[in-house]
Structures are given as structure tokens and as C-alpha cells.
Image: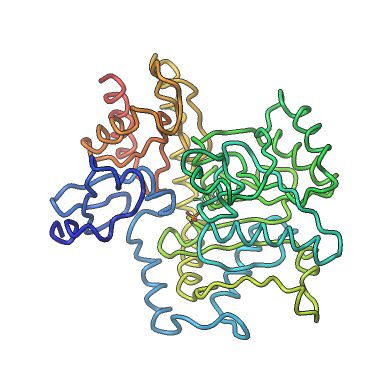
Length: 420
Ligand SMILES: *Cc1c(COP(=O)(O)O)cnc(C)c1O
């Protein structure tokens, strides 16, 4: 594979892989929580391969479902036609979501799920002849890399080349009991022209695994609802068990209007996005007038193999074994958190569900471009652990199949690296 890599064609243009210092590691096989490299190393995948592989790698149940589906119906145009896996998945998913989620819109990934959600909310008012054009989003949020998704995400070096082309958004602080009143005052000012609020519920992933409380978020959501502002809940990262409940929605006292899913949806095996919404939103589009339709469709909309993978992944997730694993990972994390609290180099240790995060404290200012990022990444790699700190934020997002002794090993190695 080295020769193939040296042709330098198939590298991702991501900062880490683009920088000269890190050659990509050729991976030839995955199994459970491990990835195997060509040179005979095995790595513990503590980021679930960018948070998607919730059941680990090469899961045989999902593989079988995909194989059977490939041999039955691999793809069909999803306009004027439908198919069983799409219908079953819609039904299964809606049954697990807050009761007001009634309709499913399929797309390809998390960013497209967000684009669809934004278009739904903007066109909702437009179709009713009372368009509202403002959008609210959380500071330090991340919703994807397409233009709409970038617009509603935290701006920084990564969006700077496009800033002229990103639409205006009103950024508000993620809710805390301290800032809620001030935030509400700001929202009230813009309420009449505001179509929607988009937010990552409970954990802002890419922003550095920042956590806020379910009570404060519910409070903010209720306030927006009282002003007729639609709520887009982006569960692309937190959905499918990550926060300890099946969805973050299960911890909130208000149900959102629109929800976005991807990442863990197919157990990380297929690219797929889903946007769900209320019947009220759907009705604003359901019409004999063509111009009221949501003109958004991707070639691979509702891919039958993606749907089959998602159905299999959901079944695993809902099994008693997997639920038990979620619980046990949380408890192990909790015990380790106790140790982290006492560590002099650590700040803000935090935990929700299976997500454990903390700041590696240095004299340097915290942030995504922190100079220790590469050092930490390499130190963990040397210990056969894949962890990709977000700047100086170290976090664990393990696959749910990880074993106790594997977690113990990772905890030990964290302490060893911190003491270097
Ligand atoms: C990863 C992510 C996205 C974007 O999903 P992609 O499939 O990478 O486009 C959107 N929202 C959140 C919260 C994410 O974590």
C-alpha cells in the first residue's frame, strides 16, 4: 500500500493529513474497537472513527444486512418510488423519537441533514406567506462543512476563506443559568423575523466536547417556542446513545420541531443523513402547488443499503447487551473522572454518557490550533491508541463494544502521557 500512498492522490485535504509531518497510516482491517495497520500494529479506535462507528468495526450483523440488501435491491430512484427498508426505518426511528416527529426526509450525511433542516424552516414561513429570514445558532457550534452548515457554525480559520459567502446568523451563548436572561433578551429583539434556532443538544462536539445542562437547554427551547421560533436539534453526533440516552431529546422537557441525524445512524457503515420534522411543518409543503415542494434531493436519497445498515444498527443498539455496555462505559468513565479531578495538569474534566473530556492545561491559551495537539496525538498513537484531541481538549468517544480492560489501558496511558 505504501506505493499507492506515495502517489499522493487519495489523501484527505484535512489539516492533519495535509501537513507534511504526518503520513497517513495504511489500515487494512477493522474488528470491534480495533483497527489493524499494514505494518502489523493494532490501534484502539477511541474516536469511533470520527464518532460514527458506534458498534466498532466490521460488525457482522450489519455486514449481513448490507449483503442481503445488496443482493435484493441496491438502489432505486426515491422520487415516484419507495422501498421497504426506507419505510421500515422511518417507522422504527419515529417510534423512538419525541411523539411530535412525524415525517422523515432522507439525504446523504450530517451536513446535508442540516441543509435540509434549514431549508425546511425557511420555506415553512415562505409557503405560508409570512417568511422570516433570521437564524439563531450557538456560539462554538459545528453543523458541517457545506455552505449553509458552515454559516450556522462557529466561524474561524476554517471558514475564513468563505466568510464573504456565508449568510448572516445571530450567534447566542449556549445556555447556562448565568446567561439565560441576557440571551432571552437578545432573542426577543429579533423574534419577529427569526425562523429558527439550530443547536447541538447537550454536547457541542467539534467545539471541544462542551457540555450544557438539559434544564437550561429546555428552558431556552421553551422560550423560543413561545415566540414562534422553530427548533432544529442537530443530533448528528449525540444521537444513537452517545449521551447515555438513546437521543439527547430523551433528556429534554421540550420536543424540537426538526431533528438531524447521521454519524451513528448506520453504525458508521454507510453514509446517510436523516432530517425529521413535525406534521405541522410537513403540511406547509404538502400541496398541489408545485412551488410549495421542498426541492431538495440527492442521488443516493434513502439508499436501500444505508437503510438496511441503519435498521441493523438500531437493533444492536436497542439490545440489552448494548444498553448494558453504555451503562458500564459510563460507570468506568465516572470512576476515572474522580482520578482526573485530582490531576494538576487537567482542567474541566466532564462526562456525559460515554463521552469523557478534559482540557490539558498549559500556559498557552486553549483552542483548536493549540501547539500540543500534534504532540498528544502522536503520544497516543505510539501507545496504539487513536485519539484526536481538539486542540488541547482530550476526549474519549469509544465504540460501545469496547471492553473494560481496553478502557483501563486507555486510562493508564492517558495518565502516562500527561505525566510526560
Ligand atoms: C459531524 C457533524 C455534522 C456534519 O456531518 P457530516 O456527515 O460530517 O457532514 C453536523 N453536525 C454535527 C453536530 C456533527 O458532529
